[in-house]
Image (cartoon, rainbow, N blue to C red; front, side, top):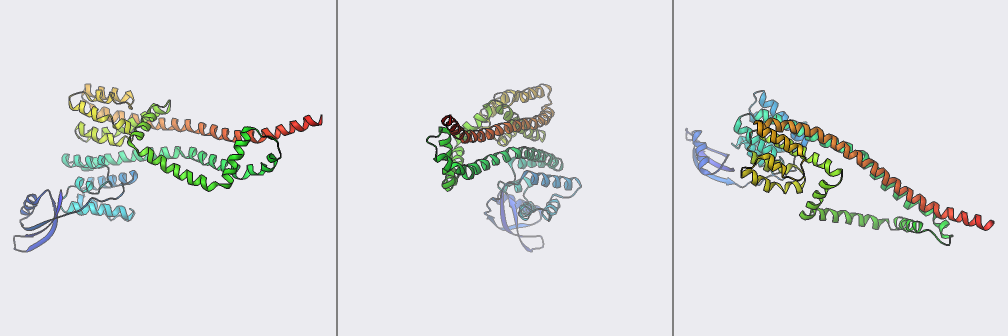
Length: 401
């Protein structure tokens, strides 16, 4: 869909200028002709897609809900977008996005095309759901479904973030405790240890680390930043990222919990798409991009090809290494009973619950591990300090006898 600046003559002979979206000049001519205007001149406008950041999940949910309520109340699409874009409670940059969508819809573009023209601002799932709703005529209901979908995604992410708060605090405390002990506490024992003839190997290692932290802390920061950059670069390499995502799914305990989370995300997306009447192949192509694991996503090309060739969807899903078997069983039952859409909704709701439980279990596993790590570090430091002091007391006691 392109945008054209045009000059046209209306039935009264008046020259009118404006802009309108059309696939080509022929379509532009037909659109103007239907409005009793004759095209005189047309020029295509080269407009690049916006590079705005993708809207956050809560903002997508609010936009979908507001759009749904306005359309359900009988407000026209143009007026609904105008009301949303004029809402002063919305950040200015976000209002600019909605205003641009409104401008393009007014010029004759469909809402889905206008959303797509915003670049990465609106996810493909949202755009395709709106496009499907435009064909079926249930835009208000689809917008409400998307509001619920993104609201669930947002709540789950918030729950994960809040659950990880305690482990993050523990991690920061571990680092701070080590820095304080190494940089300020251990140097107080330096003169005492210097008077001893020999020190245990643990103490020598500890004092060397303490000396480095106290006098060359800037190198620690420098190498920390370099190490962080190297890790980011290395894990951005497709082969390394693929290996990392494979390992995540096959680690003891953790792998099983992560499979539940990824299965829930896929099932929720697939059920939303399929319930909207989108063809199953298109559903799979879109849903795979929302999983968040490159190892699982990489298996979809073969699976989609097999489904195109006539294989049952349940068989295709069963071939994916990374999904729990409950999803395959539910899809199989849906295919047998002819109620695949309702079974997908049901399994999506069930997997959402399982995903929350899996997240809580994952956090519950991380917390004691971090406490043990912290206790191990502090314990090693205490042993390394006490051991030479206790040894010197024994030497003094032995010499006085």
